[in-house]
Image (cartoon, rainbow, N blue to C red; front, side, top):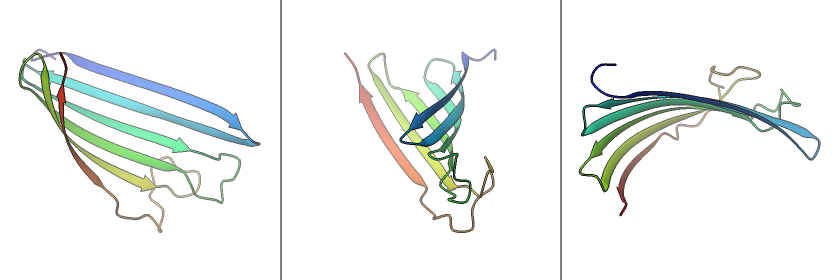
Length: 112
């Protein structure tokens, strides 16, 4: 976009561990707004046991973040994560027994 840099990232992974198959992926989008501000969105999916669809242990997390770049060494980030326990084989539908466990994080990062 014309007001700053845009980034898109994605990753997929799968693994076998002690007789079960795990898989996951994420899609991440970030946007810089001039030199002082930025924002990001991410959806992260993880199923620790794809072999057992009745277990209902897959999670999907939607995340939003805003960044303020104080100077070349200091970044302040406010992030909000919305994790969901997912229903059956769905990658997006919330299960009935999902807990309300959203998280807000405020981070100050200094590098030199």
